[in-house]
Amino acid sequence: MRNLFKIAIRNLMRYKRRTLLTASLISIGVIFVLTFTAVTTSFKNMMIGEITDSMLGHVQVHKKGYVASIDNLPLNLNLKAEQIKLIEEVLAKNTDIEAYSPRIKFGGMFSNFAETTTIRLNGIDPKKEFATTPRLTARVSSGKKELEKGEIFIPVLLSTGMGVKVGDTIVIVTTNQDGSVNGKQFKVAGILESATGPGGRDGYVHISDARELLRMDDMQVSEYAIRLKDFGKLYSFNEKMVKELSGQLNKMGKPIFEVHTWEMLTPFYHIARMITAMTFFIKLMLIAIVLISIMNVMIMAVYERIREIGTIAAIGTLPGKILSMFLIEGLCLGIIGAIIGTVLGTLIVYVLNISKITFSFAQHTGYVLTAQINPSDILTISATVIIVSVIASLQPAYKASKMEPIKALRHV
Image 1 (cartoon, one colour):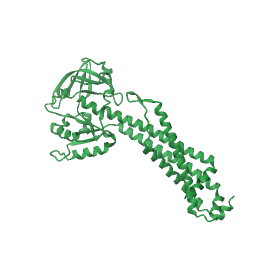
Image 2 (cartoon, helix red, strand yellow):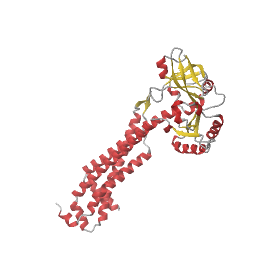
Image 3 (tube, one colour):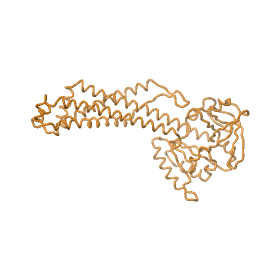
Image 4 (tube, one colour):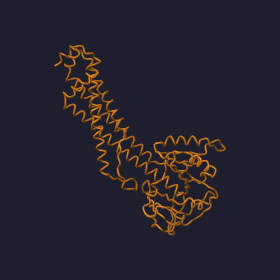
Protein backbone atom coordinates (compact mmCIF):
# COMPACT_ATOMS: atom_id res chain seq x y z
CA MET A 1 0.00 0.00 0.00
CA ARG A 2 2.87 2.37 0.79
CA ASN A 3 4.29 1.80 -2.70
CA LEU A 4 0.93 2.67 -4.22
CA PHE A 5 0.94 5.97 -2.29
CA LYS A 6 4.45 6.71 -3.55
CA ILE A 7 3.41 6.02 -7.15
CA ALA A 8 0.24 8.16 -6.75
CA ILE A 9 2.17 11.10 -5.30
CA ARG A 10 4.83 10.77 -8.01
CA ASN A 11 2.17 10.88 -10.70
CA LEU A 12 0.62 13.98 -9.14
CA MET A 13 4.02 15.68 -9.06
CA ARG A 14 4.59 14.84 -12.73
CA TYR A 15 1.63 17.00 -13.67
CA LYS A 16 2.18 19.89 -11.26
CA ARG A 17 0.10 22.49 -13.10
CA ARG A 18 -2.95 20.25 -13.32
CA THR A 19 -2.55 19.09 -9.74
CA LEU A 20 -2.19 22.67 -8.50
CA LEU A 21 -5.26 23.83 -10.43
CA THR A 22 -7.41 20.98 -9.09
CA ALA A 23 -6.22 21.43 -5.51
CA SER A 24 -6.91 25.17 -5.84
CA LEU A 25 -10.49 24.57 -6.99
CA ILE A 26 -11.11 22.19 -4.09
CA SER A 27 -9.52 24.67 -1.65
CA ILE A 28 -11.66 27.53 -2.93
CA GLY A 29 -14.78 25.42 -2.37
CA VAL A 30 -13.70 24.56 1.19
CA ILE A 31 -12.80 28.21 1.95
CA PHE A 32 -16.14 29.45 0.66
CA VAL A 33 -18.18 26.90 2.63
CA LEU A 34 -16.22 27.38 5.87
CA THR A 35 -16.51 31.17 5.69
CA PHE A 36 -20.18 31.11 4.73
CA THR A 37 -20.99 28.60 7.46
CA ALA A 38 -19.12 30.61 10.11
CA VAL A 39 -20.79 33.91 9.15
CA THR A 40 -24.33 32.53 8.78
CA THR A 41 -24.03 30.58 12.04
CA SER A 42 -22.96 33.78 13.78
CA PHE A 43 -25.93 35.67 12.31
CA LYS A 44 -28.37 32.89 13.19
CA ASN A 45 -27.09 32.66 16.78
CA MET A 46 -27.33 36.44 17.12
CA MET A 47 -30.90 36.43 15.82
CA ILE A 48 -31.95 33.58 18.12
CA GLY A 49 -30.21 35.25 21.07
CA GLU A 50 -31.96 38.57 20.39
CA ILE A 51 -35.39 36.93 20.24
CA THR A 52 -34.96 34.63 23.25
CA ASP A 53 -32.92 36.95 25.47
CA SER A 54 -35.03 40.05 24.98
CA MET A 55 -38.61 38.75 24.98
CA LEU A 56 -39.40 35.01 24.69
CA GLY A 57 -37.01 33.06 26.88
CA HIS A 58 -35.89 29.61 25.77
CA VAL A 59 -39.00 27.65 26.80
CA GLN A 60 -42.50 28.66 27.87
CA VAL A 61 -45.18 26.85 29.88
CA HIS A 62 -48.88 27.67 29.43
CA LYS A 63 -52.26 26.28 30.21
CA LYS A 64 -53.42 23.92 27.46
CA GLY A 65 -54.91 25.87 24.56
CA TYR A 66 -53.41 29.25 25.49
CA VAL A 67 -50.94 29.52 22.60
CA ALA A 68 -53.65 28.67 20.05
CA SER A 69 -55.61 31.70 21.34
CA ILE A 70 -52.66 33.94 22.22
CA ASP A 71 -53.65 36.71 19.77
CA ASN A 72 -56.71 37.32 21.95
CA LEU A 73 -54.68 37.22 25.21
CA PRO A 74 -57.39 35.09 26.87
CA LEU A 75 -57.65 35.72 30.62
CA ASN A 76 -59.83 32.63 31.08
CA LEU A 77 -56.83 30.44 30.16
CA ASN A 78 -54.55 31.80 32.87
CA LEU A 79 -52.87 29.39 35.25
CA LYS A 80 -54.52 29.32 38.68
CA ALA A 81 -52.88 29.19 42.14
CA GLU A 82 -52.80 25.38 42.41
CA GLN A 83 -51.34 25.00 38.93
CA ILE A 84 -48.79 27.76 39.60
CA LYS A 85 -47.61 25.96 42.72
CA LEU A 86 -47.21 22.70 40.80
CA ILE A 87 -45.20 24.33 37.98
CA GLU A 88 -42.92 26.22 40.37
CA GLU A 89 -42.17 22.99 42.26
CA VAL A 90 -41.12 21.35 38.98
CA LEU A 91 -39.03 24.35 37.93
CA ALA A 92 -37.36 24.80 41.32
CA LYS A 93 -35.91 21.28 41.36
CA ASN A 94 -34.65 21.32 37.75
CA THR A 95 -30.90 22.00 37.71
CA ASP A 96 -30.86 22.88 33.98
CA ILE A 97 -32.77 26.12 34.62
CA GLU A 98 -30.88 29.38 35.10
CA ALA A 99 -33.97 31.55 35.69
CA TYR A 100 -37.72 31.63 35.14
CA SER A 101 -40.30 34.38 35.14
CA PRO A 102 -44.10 34.38 35.60
CA ARG A 103 -46.01 36.76 33.34
CA ILE A 104 -49.54 38.07 33.06
CA LYS A 105 -50.38 39.04 29.48
CA PHE A 106 -53.38 41.20 28.70
CA GLY A 107 -54.64 43.85 26.34
CA GLY A 108 -55.74 47.35 27.20
CA MET A 109 -56.32 50.90 26.06
CA PHE A 110 -53.46 53.36 26.29
CA SER A 111 -54.33 57.03 26.80
CA ASN A 112 -52.23 60.19 27.11
CA PHE A 113 -55.41 62.13 28.05
CA ALA A 114 -55.68 63.44 24.50
CA GLU A 115 -55.57 60.30 22.36
CA THR A 116 -56.29 56.62 22.95
CA THR A 117 -54.99 53.48 21.27
CA THR A 118 -54.54 49.78 21.99
CA ILE A 119 -51.56 48.21 23.74
CA ARG A 120 -50.43 44.70 24.69
CA LEU A 121 -49.11 44.50 28.23
CA ASN A 122 -46.90 42.08 30.13
CA GLY A 123 -47.14 42.05 33.90
CA ILE A 124 -43.73 40.95 35.16
CA ASP A 125 -41.67 40.51 38.28
CA PRO A 126 -38.74 42.74 37.18
CA LYS A 127 -36.01 40.83 39.02
CA LYS A 128 -37.09 37.46 37.61
CA GLU A 129 -37.87 38.82 34.15
CA PHE A 130 -34.51 40.56 33.72
CA ALA A 131 -32.74 37.35 34.75
CA THR A 132 -34.79 35.31 32.26
CA THR A 133 -34.55 37.81 29.37
CA PRO A 134 -31.28 39.68 30.08
CA ARG A 135 -31.41 41.75 26.88
CA LEU A 136 -34.80 43.25 27.71
CA THR A 137 -33.19 46.23 29.45
CA ALA A 138 -30.91 46.73 26.42
CA ARG A 139 -34.05 47.55 24.42
CA VAL A 140 -34.75 50.57 26.63
CA SER A 141 -33.67 53.41 24.33
CA SER A 142 -34.41 56.18 26.84
CA GLY A 143 -35.35 56.31 30.50
CA LYS A 144 -34.21 54.05 33.29
CA LYS A 145 -33.62 50.35 32.98
CA GLU A 146 -35.53 49.43 36.13
CA LEU A 147 -39.26 48.96 36.56
CA GLU A 148 -41.05 49.69 39.81
CA LYS A 149 -44.70 49.60 40.87
CA GLY A 150 -46.71 52.32 39.23
CA GLU A 151 -44.31 52.53 36.27
CA ILE A 152 -44.51 51.32 32.68
CA PHE A 153 -42.20 50.60 29.76
CA ILE A 154 -43.98 51.67 26.57
CA PRO A 155 -43.08 50.68 22.99
CA VAL A 156 -41.35 53.31 20.87
CA LEU A 157 -44.25 53.08 18.40
CA LEU A 158 -46.63 54.61 20.94
CA SER A 159 -44.07 57.06 22.24
CA THR A 160 -43.48 58.46 18.76
CA GLY A 161 -47.05 58.29 17.53
CA MET A 162 -48.65 59.86 20.60
CA GLY A 163 -45.83 62.16 21.71
CA VAL A 164 -45.32 60.48 25.07
CA LYS A 165 -41.97 60.97 26.80
CA VAL A 166 -40.18 59.47 29.79
CA GLY A 167 -41.69 60.88 32.98
CA ASP A 168 -45.13 61.52 31.47
CA THR A 169 -48.26 60.16 33.12
CA ILE A 170 -50.56 57.93 31.10
CA VAL A 171 -53.65 55.83 31.79
CA ILE A 172 -54.20 52.15 31.06
CA VAL A 173 -57.80 50.96 30.86
CA THR A 174 -58.54 47.24 30.63
CA THR A 175 -61.35 44.74 31.02
CA ASN A 176 -60.99 41.81 33.39
CA GLN A 177 -62.28 38.28 32.99
CA ASP A 178 -65.70 39.18 34.46
CA GLY A 179 -66.17 42.03 31.99
CA SER A 180 -65.72 44.90 34.42
CA VAL A 181 -63.58 47.84 33.37
CA ASN A 182 -60.76 49.27 35.44
CA GLY A 183 -58.14 51.97 34.89
CA LYS A 184 -54.87 52.97 36.49
CA GLN A 185 -52.37 55.78 36.03
CA PHE A 186 -48.74 54.95 35.27
CA LYS A 187 -45.55 56.93 35.00
CA VAL A 188 -43.51 56.22 31.85
CA ALA A 189 -40.19 54.81 33.09
CA GLY A 190 -38.68 53.89 29.74
CA ILE A 191 -39.17 53.78 25.97
CA LEU A 192 -38.79 50.26 24.64
CA GLU A 193 -37.55 49.38 21.17
CA SER A 194 -39.18 46.38 19.51
CA ALA A 195 -37.18 43.17 19.26
CA THR A 196 -38.85 42.30 15.97
CA GLY A 197 -38.74 45.56 14.06
CA PRO A 198 -41.23 48.45 13.72
CA GLY A 199 -44.80 47.75 14.73
CA GLY A 200 -44.22 46.22 18.17
CA ARG A 201 -46.95 47.20 20.64
CA ASP A 202 -45.81 45.37 23.78
CA GLY A 203 -45.40 47.28 27.02
CA TYR A 204 -44.34 46.12 30.49
CA VAL A 205 -45.78 46.85 33.94
CA HIS A 206 -45.11 45.39 37.37
CA ILE A 207 -46.99 42.14 37.97
CA SER A 208 -48.63 43.61 41.08
CA ASP A 209 -50.05 46.46 38.98
CA ALA A 210 -51.30 43.95 36.42
CA ARG A 211 -53.20 42.04 39.13
CA GLU A 212 -54.64 45.28 40.46
CA LEU A 213 -55.76 46.38 36.99
CA LEU A 214 -57.36 43.01 36.27
CA ARG A 215 -58.85 42.81 39.80
CA MET A 216 -57.41 39.39 40.45
CA ASP A 217 -58.39 38.17 43.91
CA ASP A 218 -56.09 35.18 43.72
CA MET A 219 -52.75 34.40 42.07
CA GLN A 220 -52.92 34.00 38.27
CA VAL A 221 -50.22 33.69 35.60
CA SER A 222 -50.54 33.63 31.80
CA GLU A 223 -47.20 31.95 31.15
CA TYR A 224 -43.84 30.97 32.58
CA ALA A 225 -40.78 31.93 30.55
CA ILE A 226 -37.69 29.79 31.23
CA ARG A 227 -34.01 30.44 30.56
CA LEU A 228 -31.63 27.48 30.44
CA LYS A 229 -28.03 27.37 31.62
CA ASP A 230 -27.07 25.57 28.41
CA PHE A 231 -29.04 26.45 25.27
CA GLY A 232 -27.69 23.27 23.65
CA LYS A 233 -29.92 21.23 25.99
CA LEU A 234 -33.08 22.91 24.70
CA TYR A 235 -34.69 19.83 23.14
CA SER A 236 -33.80 17.39 25.91
CA PHE A 237 -35.09 19.86 28.50
CA ASN A 238 -38.31 20.38 26.55
CA GLU A 239 -38.90 16.62 26.37
CA LYS A 240 -38.23 16.33 30.09
CA MET A 241 -40.68 19.13 30.93
CA VAL A 242 -43.36 17.68 28.66
CA LYS A 243 -42.93 14.30 30.35
CA GLU A 244 -43.08 15.76 33.87
CA LEU A 245 -46.17 17.87 33.19
CA SER A 246 -48.05 15.52 30.86
CA GLY A 247 -49.23 13.46 33.81
CA GLN A 248 -51.28 16.40 35.11
CA LEU A 249 -54.81 15.94 33.75
CA ASN A 250 -58.06 17.86 34.19
CA LYS A 251 -61.42 16.36 35.13
CA MET A 252 -61.98 15.36 31.50
CA GLY A 253 -58.70 13.42 31.42
CA LYS A 254 -56.91 15.93 29.16
CA PRO A 255 -53.52 17.56 29.84
CA ILE A 256 -53.59 20.78 31.84
CA PHE A 257 -50.30 22.22 30.59
CA GLU A 258 -48.49 22.74 27.31
CA VAL A 259 -44.76 23.35 26.86
CA HIS A 260 -43.24 25.17 23.88
CA THR A 261 -39.70 25.96 22.84
CA TRP A 262 -38.98 29.42 21.39
CA GLU A 263 -39.19 27.91 17.89
CA MET A 264 -42.91 27.29 18.27
CA LEU A 265 -43.63 30.85 19.40
CA THR A 266 -42.09 33.10 16.74
CA PRO A 267 -42.00 33.29 12.92
CA PHE A 268 -38.27 34.06 13.14
CA TYR A 269 -37.73 30.33 13.54
CA HIS A 270 -38.51 29.98 9.83
CA ILE A 271 -35.75 32.48 9.02
CA ALA A 272 -33.34 30.39 11.09
CA ARG A 273 -34.41 27.32 9.12
CA MET A 274 -33.85 29.17 5.84
CA ILE A 275 -30.29 30.00 6.94
CA THR A 276 -29.68 26.33 7.74
CA ALA A 277 -31.12 25.34 4.34
CA MET A 278 -28.89 27.86 2.54
CA THR A 279 -25.84 26.46 4.30
CA PHE A 280 -26.84 22.95 3.24
CA PHE A 281 -27.17 23.96 -0.43
CA ILE A 282 -23.82 25.75 -0.31
CA LYS A 283 -22.29 22.48 0.90
CA LEU A 284 -23.95 20.71 -2.04
CA MET A 285 -22.26 23.23 -4.34
CA LEU A 286 -18.93 22.31 -2.73
CA ILE A 287 -19.58 18.64 -3.45
CA ALA A 288 -20.36 19.49 -7.08
CA ILE A 289 -17.15 21.54 -7.44
CA VAL A 290 -15.04 18.74 -5.98
CA LEU A 291 -16.80 16.04 -8.00
CA ILE A 292 -16.36 17.81 -11.33
CA SER A 293 -12.79 18.91 -10.61
CA ILE A 294 -11.54 15.50 -9.51
CA MET A 295 -13.39 13.59 -12.21
CA ASN A 296 -12.02 15.88 -14.92
CA VAL A 297 -8.45 15.46 -13.69
CA MET A 298 -8.68 11.71 -13.33
CA ILE A 299 -10.29 11.22 -16.74
CA MET A 300 -7.51 13.27 -18.33
CA ALA A 301 -4.93 11.29 -16.36
CA VAL A 302 -6.31 8.01 -17.67
CA TYR A 303 -6.35 9.14 -21.31
CA GLU A 304 -2.85 10.62 -21.10
CA ARG A 305 -1.42 7.49 -19.48
CA ILE A 306 -3.05 4.74 -21.52
CA ARG A 307 0.28 3.30 -22.69
CA GLU A 308 1.66 3.51 -19.14
CA ILE A 309 -1.38 1.65 -17.87
CA GLY A 310 -0.90 -0.97 -20.59
CA THR A 311 2.75 -1.39 -19.60
CA ILE A 312 2.10 -1.95 -15.90
CA ALA A 313 -0.77 -4.29 -16.77
CA ALA A 314 1.46 -6.24 -19.18
CA ILE A 315 4.10 -6.87 -16.50
CA GLY A 316 1.50 -8.50 -14.27
CA THR A 317 0.03 -5.69 -12.19
CA LEU A 318 -3.41 -6.80 -11.07
CA PRO A 319 -6.47 -4.70 -12.08
CA GLY A 320 -7.22 -4.13 -8.38
CA LYS A 321 -3.86 -2.41 -7.85
CA ILE A 322 -4.34 -0.22 -10.91
CA LEU A 323 -7.76 0.73 -9.57
CA SER A 324 -6.26 1.50 -6.14
CA MET A 325 -3.50 3.65 -7.66
CA PHE A 326 -5.96 6.04 -9.29
CA LEU A 327 -8.24 6.09 -6.25
CA ILE A 328 -5.26 7.03 -4.08
CA GLU A 329 -4.44 9.89 -6.44
CA GLY A 330 -7.98 11.24 -5.98
CA LEU A 331 -7.68 10.72 -2.23
CA CYS A 332 -4.43 12.71 -2.12
CA LEU A 333 -5.97 15.55 -4.13
CA GLY A 334 -8.91 15.67 -1.70
CA ILE A 335 -6.64 15.70 1.36
CA ILE A 336 -4.40 18.44 -0.06
CA GLY A 337 -7.39 20.60 -1.03
CA ALA A 338 -9.09 20.08 2.34
CA ILE A 339 -5.96 21.01 4.32
CA ILE A 340 -5.20 24.15 2.28
CA GLY A 341 -8.87 25.22 2.27
CA THR A 342 -9.25 24.72 6.02
CA VAL A 343 -6.11 26.72 6.84
CA LEU A 344 -7.01 29.61 4.53
CA GLY A 345 -10.70 29.53 5.56
CA THR A 346 -9.75 29.73 9.24
CA LEU A 347 -7.41 32.63 8.47
CA ILE A 348 -10.18 34.52 6.60
CA VAL A 349 -12.59 34.04 9.51
CA TYR A 350 -9.92 35.35 11.90
CA VAL A 351 -9.44 38.44 9.71
CA LEU A 352 -13.22 39.02 9.64
CA ASN A 353 -13.35 38.87 13.44
CA ILE A 354 -10.50 41.29 14.05
CA SER A 355 -12.04 43.66 11.49
CA LYS A 356 -15.01 44.14 13.86
CA ILE A 357 -17.64 44.26 11.11
CA THR A 358 -20.94 45.61 12.47
CA PHE A 359 -24.49 45.21 11.21
CA SER A 360 -28.07 45.83 12.31
CA PHE A 361 -30.93 43.53 13.25
CA ALA A 362 -34.53 44.72 13.60
CA GLN A 363 -34.25 48.10 15.37
CA HIS A 364 -30.86 47.42 16.93
CA THR A 365 -27.52 48.50 15.54
CA GLY A 366 -23.92 47.86 16.43
CA TYR A 367 -23.91 44.07 16.44
CA VAL A 368 -20.34 42.91 15.89
CA LEU A 369 -19.77 39.92 13.63
CA THR A 370 -18.24 37.10 15.67
CA ALA A 371 -17.85 34.31 13.15
CA GLN A 372 -16.81 30.98 14.64
CA ILE A 373 -15.75 27.75 12.99
CA ASN A 374 -16.86 24.70 14.89
CA PRO A 375 -14.48 21.72 14.86
CA SER A 376 -17.44 19.57 13.82
CA ASP A 377 -17.92 21.73 10.70
CA ILE A 378 -14.23 21.37 9.79
CA LEU A 379 -14.40 17.60 10.20
CA THR A 380 -17.67 17.32 8.28
CA ILE A 381 -16.53 19.48 5.35
CA SER A 382 -13.08 17.86 5.15
CA ALA A 383 -14.53 14.35 5.32
CA THR A 384 -17.08 15.25 2.64
CA VAL A 385 -14.37 16.60 0.34
CA ILE A 386 -12.15 13.55 0.77
CA ILE A 387 -14.98 11.04 0.32
CA VAL A 388 -16.29 12.83 -2.78
CA SER A 389 -12.75 12.96 -4.17
CA VAL A 390 -12.47 9.19 -3.93
CA ILE A 391 -15.94 8.69 -5.41
CA ALA A 392 -15.12 11.03 -8.31
CA SER A 393 -11.98 8.99 -9.03
CA LEU A 394 -13.87 5.71 -9.07
CA GLN A 395 -15.15 5.74 -12.67
CA PRO A 396 -11.84 6.75 -14.31
CA ALA A 397 -9.97 4.31 -12.05
CA TYR A 398 -12.35 1.49 -12.98
CA LYS A 399 -11.89 2.32 -16.67
CA ALA A 400 -8.10 2.17 -16.27
CA SER A 401 -8.21 -1.17 -14.46
CA LYS A 402 -10.30 -2.77 -17.23
CA MET A 403 -8.01 -1.82 -20.12
CA GLU A 404 -6.63 -4.61 -22.29
CA PRO A 405 -2.79 -4.45 -22.12
CA ILE A 406 -2.31 -5.10 -25.88
CA LYS A 407 -4.79 -2.41 -26.93
CA ALA A 408 -3.33 0.05 -24.43
CA LEU A 409 0.25 -0.52 -25.70
CA ARG A 410 -0.88 0.13 -29.27
CA HIS A 411 -2.53 3.43 -28.29
CA VAL A 412 -0.94 6.50 -29.89
